[in-house]
View 1 (cartoon, rainbow, N blue to C red):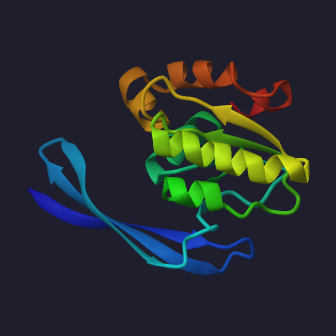
View 2 (cartoon, rainbow, N blue to C red):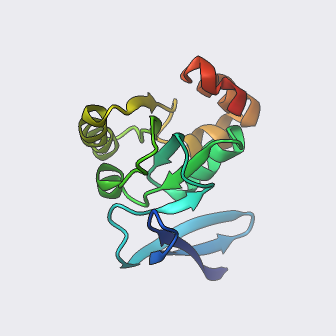
Amino acid sequence: MNDFPFDAVGFDLDGHITGVMRTYLRRCDADVRVIMRKAMGDLAGNGVRFGPNAVVMAVGEGVETVLSLRMAMPGMSMVSALSAAHVAAWISPPSLRRVYIAVDQDAAGRNAAMRLRYRLEPLGVVVIDLTPQRKDFNDDLTADGLSMLRARIADQLHAEDRNQL
């Protein structure tokens, strides 16, 4: 059994480091499990960024969820906010016109998506929820594979964004 940390670095809109989410992982045979998480710094409103600020982006809770989406949509810029509360508080770039919220299928995930929607829609941002079959998109990817994940996501995307698959 081996324990090791995985650090996800949070950035603000200008690319400055604002904090770190350290996840302690435990490797047991072929399986890797999260055993503890610790947030350090100012992560609220910021996140782990995968790609530059863009007019169309996706935002989700966990790094695992967002990386699963990124595998399915490698051309889309994304942000992992690192928690449901941070999804609700996410500070979007001023250029944002459409955002996909990867909604974790629990009360906290649905509430965070609703709160972010209520903040962004009055600013003229089109908000589209992406919903997984299971708790999150990492669970879907693990259970069903990348082809099935892409097919499910394609049905939820705006027509202009299907080229991101």
